[in-house]
Image 1 (tube, rainbow, N blue to C red):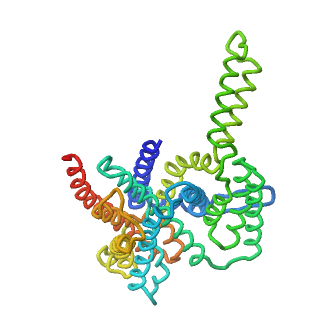
Image 2 (spheres, helix red, strand yellow; image 1 turned 90 degrees about the vertical axis):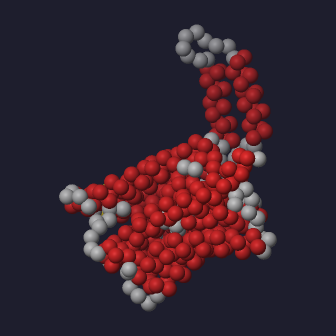
Image 3 (cartoon, helix red, strand yellow; image 1 turned 60 degrees about the vertical axis):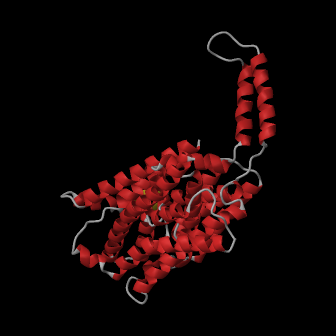
Length: 432
């Protein structure tokens, strides 16, 4: 199951990469007006007298990305309840590394832009693109230990939570308190449904989208935050434990075999009731959280993120590139994603291990350094924060061009460092 998930993440990274290439080629081709016309096409939602009309770009960034953040929230909750972040001792290293990898890039960016026009972009170099980063790591196969992948996933999950908090507290303005209270009321309804044992995905989808997300949309707080809140309200516990489920399944299996069959291709009424009972027991043995996360995984990897890349990565390259890269915004992003991520992650990890608060288990310092450089791939979240931080098209252009260039460099340098460090470890292991 884990290998299937890893393969899906690799192919998701491939799809996102192809979407980036298509967007860049399209935006710099003779058909660039078609591209920009497409992403700015007005799309309307009409329900009775209610109408909501926004360009395609906004529907993707505020709507589809809310689904992405719902997925992130589900993943975070699962990891906290019974995954990589549930063991405090094991979680210290990736959490500390993630915090270091967020704070230092923001600080370095601010050193270049404090008091300038680009000062609001300090959140751009803070986040890691988990799809690209894990995709790069997975390409190394067995040369990379599973524990290193676990470290990167846990780090990226905490990183995403940090990005959500930054968006919520620092990239939100003109708040409409009434709409925020309405969102809170719907959120309480979701929590109440969880408490009462409601396990239907439709309940959480309808109340979440039609209530929480829509209220956030009109409140001024970015609606992607709604995705995280909805995820936290979805039940993460089974109704029957594994042992009880297995016993009941065995009993129903015996009853099905002993039931008198009927002629033809149909089954008997008794067998039909037994199969329906098996479905109910299976549903009780699953958590709604995991069911929804499992269903969303391919949607996020092969639709939401590639579409986001397609409508956001279409940077029309123009002007003096060297002059653009010498811009303070560009210098802040490049320094933040490359130096900030590397020093922040490795520095925080070294301090935690040196003080005895955490241990380095299953991978080497060289491999951790490689992952720290790969974490400088900030594509999705960095693009996302860019659109929130800057209203000026030229500033967005400088930022996005810098993100694309830096993410490519981080991927190449990180892969090279990881190849060298992993080859040494792999050869040593093979000789033993």
